[in-house]
Image (cartoon, rainbow, N blue to C red; front, side, top):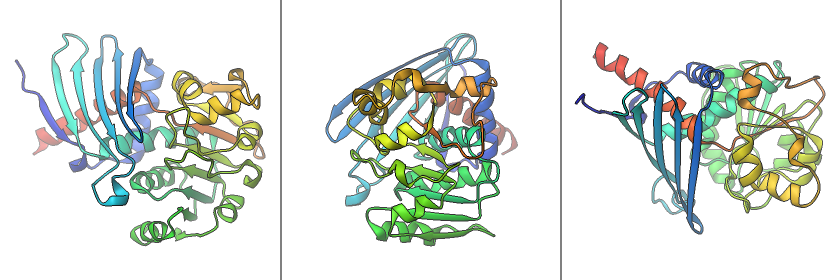
Length: 315
């Protein structure tokens, strides 16, 4: 039996644009079968994501989400392990650990959505939330929109926003912390929400014409980052209808209130990658819900396996 490759995602040097393109190619190839199991002992969660691209690969990811970890110094909020299997004979190919895996997967998903939906001349990025995901989110969004010249970071705890802004340095780009989320959003071309909030941190009334909204944080019906007005104003897109519309609070709560209907989702990511219409004008507001899914973990696992294999051969 061939050896199983142990991959530390944190040790890989991943080019954001390369990973975004791997996701784009993966969506064009087809998602295949995907399933999820969510166990909760509030506020903590254990997620199991599985996916199968017939003839290509299978994967299973276990992710423990403990949202209070960072605040009390107990380590990252999300810890995961991914197992990748060969699609021809089912043999295990790799075990992938490291917090960079989920962060890169999440950021690449949003970046692909932004590449397909945000205005190509976007100059201002507002990020609401300064947790562990925020830095990766910023790097990937900057990669697909090199036109961005200013990044404004807001967090409920202002100290965390200032620390993140101080830690980031990108030539030619002004990066700073702000204490007023509304003021930051009103001038933003792209708004990325990376919180674990149960109450909206983004108000639709704040969005300027032409803005693109990237919602990352919610993954249960009780969690949400954007209010009903944001959902009403925007043309709605998701990475997958199944997980976004049925499980994420922005959709479940807005649908329950009668603000939107499931049919208001214009397209999911695979359809956009296949040429479905996205943004129609420079003035309309677009909204992309990053709900995740095992198919994304499978695509990223295959990409990391290929990258680690190359590093192994060259090393």
